[in-house]
Each structure stands twice: as structure tokens, then as C-alpha cells.
Image 1: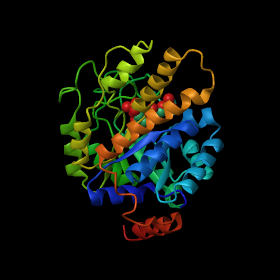
Image 2: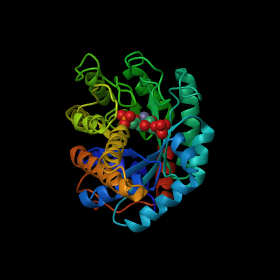
Image 3: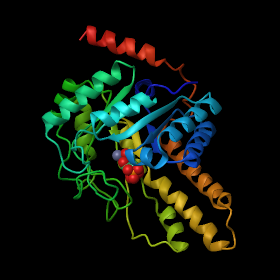
Length: 342
Ligand code: G3H
Ligand code: 13P
Ligand code: ZN
């Protein structure tokens, strides 16, 4: 089956009351891990690539690996999504390459660090929506700014400086016509999100619930949603790593979000931890080995386990065959008719 529209996946998730994990990839093994987890759990999937991933992989490699995935796993509705597009041009090039969904992260300026103005965000996002919808492609926008600078995305700080304002969220959705909306509620990218298990003073689930009440039809997206489980931290440290104690977003908070309009949940760090732990273990236990397959296979397996678990916890498991995918041409017609009736 061809790569499918993210809008359809999220609409179906809303109907079914579940969330869909969006997992970052940079290479073949990560794509294989996700597709195997999807097959095992019968899940629809969102595979996403950041600008860094596109440059690391020379994105054409990644794109053709994704075509292989859709050919080898025809029963799995699969989306290829651009994570954190920083400009109209970045989104345009992803659309031209064959991504079926793009994120225009206009909450930050093109440098990916400096918060932009509301007007700048609306302007660039609206332009991306016009282009994308004319081709049946989905758009995710962002309002409010995530914390953290560890991976180059986000404005730094604790993540509480630019929490999403519900009035602005409503105006943003109205003015841009985005399909999905990423909001800032205190999370950040990377492993070092919280210095203890987060409570309501640092993870603003109440704000998310407020926004959902104001925008019940909008698919909400949670970024920075790795849970950074202690067992994955421990494996890394047991085999020579040096992670400092840290906390991520507890799965039960994500599940609360899913009950309140969250349909897409972004996870990268947990998979990075799983891969690194598995590779360290092989290196420490069998230092005589030097065939990359000896450590890439366990790494792929470790990531598959994390992804399959998240798919089950987010509720997408078992939903791969609930519906027939709509073509991008049909999605284009739907966007046109929604515009005509607006
Ligand atoms: O947005 C953050 C993701 O974890 C991707 O990170 O830019 O290092 O590929 P990256
Ligand atoms: P984590 O760093 O928590 O995995 O977040 C990933 C993310 O939000 C990608 O856009
Ligand atoms: Zn993100």
C-alpha cells in the first residue's frame, strides 16, 4: 500500500479514542524496528524524520527505505512525516520528495531556537497549509514553545516559559487550517526533561485539557513524550555509560492526554536509549566481536520492544485494519470541498 495521509490516521484515532506514536528514524534498522513492531501489534504507524535525519541519511535513501517498508508491510497504514520543519522551503522539499505529512514548526524562527511572533507563525504555517492541502498532504503546526536545547530544537529553559495560551491556540487553528496542533505543556526534547517524577507544577496536563475543551475537533500532538524509563537508563550505565538520573513523561500522563484529544505522540529518545544500551551490552560482554550485525541486530530488537510497548500503551495496537486508506488525490478533494463550504 502507498504511504498514506496522516490526517486520515488521526481522524480514525479520534473516532477510536486512541493515540498514535510518531517515531523518529535516521536509518534502515530504526525503520525495520518500527515496521516489525507495527506488524506484531497490528498498528497503523507514523514514521518521522527531522531535518537532521534528512541530512544524515541524504533523505532520498530514507524515502526509498520507506517505500520498501510500505511494499514489505502492505497491511500497515504508514505515514512518512517531516518532524519540525523550520521553513516553508523545508516543508516544500519534503512534499516534493514524497512525505505524506509535514510539520511546520513556526513557533520558532528558522534557526530553530528563537521564538517567533504569533503573526510570523500564522503566516508561514498558512502558506505551508495552502501548498500541502493542494496535494492532499497533512500539516501539523505548533503554538507555544518546547523547552530544552539538547537536540537543537526548542527555546531552552525549563519548558514553562512559553506554555501554549488557549486563546492563541484557537485563533491559530482558525487562521491556519492545520490538521494537527502541537502544544507546549512543559515537556522538552531529549533525556533530561525533569529532575524528579513530574507533577502538575512542571507538566501542565490541566492546560492540555483546557485547550482540548476549546478545540474539541483538533488533533493535539505531544512532543518530547519519551518516558525515559529507568530500566533503559540502567542498562546504559551498567555497560559503561554515564547518564545522570533523569525523568521523562510518565506513560499514564500521556494516556490522560489521549483521553483529552492527544492523537499523535512523538517519541525518539526512548528508542535512542534502547539502541545504545543494547550496543553497549554487546561491546562490554563480547569485546572480541566486530561484525556490525552482531550489535545492530540486538539494537534493532531493543527498539522494536520499546515501540511495540508504546503502541500498546497508546492504544493504536489492533487498529491497522479498521479502515481502507484514502488516496492523497481523494484527500486533496476533501480539502477543496471543506474550503468551498467554509
Ligand atoms: O525533534 C527532535 C527529535 O528527537 C529529532 O532529533 O534533530 O536530533 O534528529 P534530531
Ligand atoms: P523525545 O526527545 O522526548 O523523544 O521527543 C521527540 C520529539 O518530540 C520529536 O519531535
Ligand atoms: Zn518534537
